[in-house]
Structures are given as C-alpha cells and as structure tokens.
Image (cartoon, rainbow, N blue to C red; front, side, top):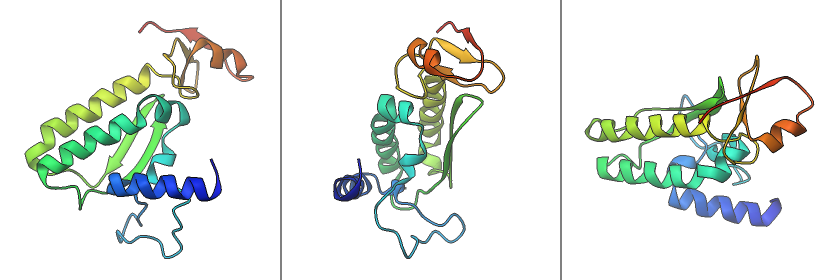
Length: 151
C-alpha cells in the first residue's frame, strides 16, 4: 500500500498503538521530517506481520495499560535474528514484567513456527543463515538449502 492510504492506515495504527511511532533511539524525539509513511511495525518481517503483528500489538498494549506505561514505552528495534523475532525496547513497568516477558517469549516461539515471507505455518528451515519458511515459499527461494522441521 502506498501514498495517502498508507499514511492514513499508519496514523490509525499509531493512534491505537502509540509505541509504533518512530522515535530517535537516544533522544526519544519524533524525527522532524516524520510523515507517517512508516511505523516501527514495518521492521517486522512481512509474514510475521500478516500472521500475528496486530495481535501482538493488541496484547502488548493491554499489558502496558495495566502497568500504566503505555505513554512511556518505546521500541528501540524490531528484527529477525537466528530465524526468530527480536523486539528491543526501553523496558516495561515492573508491575507487569511477568506478563510482558511471557508475551515476548510467546511471540519469539511463534516466529520460529511461522513463515517469514507469507505467515503460514513453517515447515522448512534454511541451512546456514537460519530462517523459517513454509514449503511453498522455500520452493521459490533461489538460494540456500533447507531441511524439514517438526512443529
């Protein structure tokens, strides 16, 4: 999605999930030229975003609201590493840390079982650079070898 539609969708996402607003990692300020053309969620691989991106944000918001930390919570980086989700932030309120760490662990494990490209259940693991794919997406890859995984 591009243009005006994407900007309106991103504005709605940030209104619902303020932690998706991109900020400078060191100052916490929103970039002066920020135009809603992207959010922090854009760093989540497409397949994971399709499969569980919004649900993950809803659950995180619920945890942060319970802990009174929705307005101060900041994402510092979202990425894939060794085939699984890495979600870095400035921490959560101590009162909800158990729920937060359970949330984080659940989505790391879910990412291991989800195709990084399309969001379907992963059945293949790439050899070398570890990434998880469904059979269809693995068959379209022109690089690397794959082994079957058991979920």
